[in-house]
Image (cartoon, rainbow, N blue to C red; front, side, top):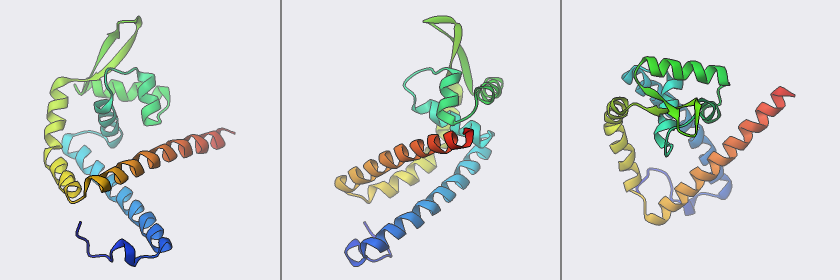
Length: 165
């Protein structure tokens, strides 16, 4: 991997940790701006875009309650979000085969295709970054992202519990 920074052996552990914190903050800020730009590009609100991305990762249809859990929204806000997305033709409501009183939400095929097409160029650009890493490095990156996401979810729950108390 090429970089204009010193190699890892030239950094102290404290310097590496500080760099990771700084780069993580930059990554979060830049990715937030990218998400806003992508949402604007496809004509969605950033929260709606986040919901679409999360639905795309789910193996099948989800309930509105699942959407609330995945997005961190209240159940009422999640219902309004789904209503907006249904009206925009982004998602469809389908009857739950196990409980006909409940509906499940799934991405509409045309929306999946349209938003997938919008992700084509950025997806290739992000993929190109990963091409510069060895399989061993990719394993570490994937592990870090997984663990960091778990910490993020746990800290979100902790903060919300403190705010409720």
